[in-house]
Length: 147
Image 1 (tube, rainbow, N blue to C red):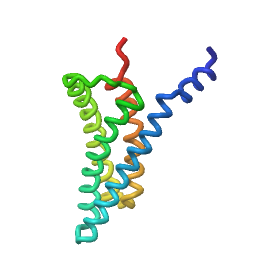
Image 2: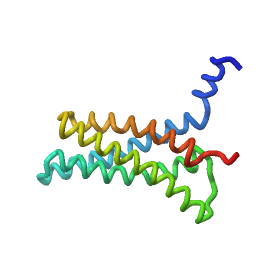
Image 3: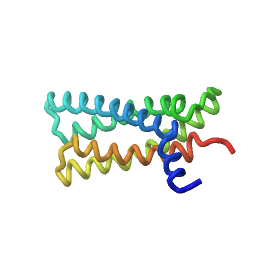
């Protein structure tokens, strides 16, 4: 198989395409929750530093729950529902998401509070980092195929 064929096979596969679609949907869940909470908190008088960080945490929780189930069922086609398996799998998924969430939380704070970047641009940049980090964790550690 040539290098070009290998690249095509890597890029044009169902798993990667469905991961991107689910990632976009997860990002939309994150954005909607982030925007609703951020704007509501600003409307009631909180500053952008507090509102953006609080909104980020709540959006993170909503998007992680959405991402777990959509990745499990649609991307990696893992239909094992045994409670002990789900617990172990979800714990791994949450661990990876918490690691990426902590990193992106501090990146968000850095961008908004120190660099004074617009909170939506900061959200976009941290979400892009999250997408890549979480794919690698999901593919190679959480939903990996048993050999």
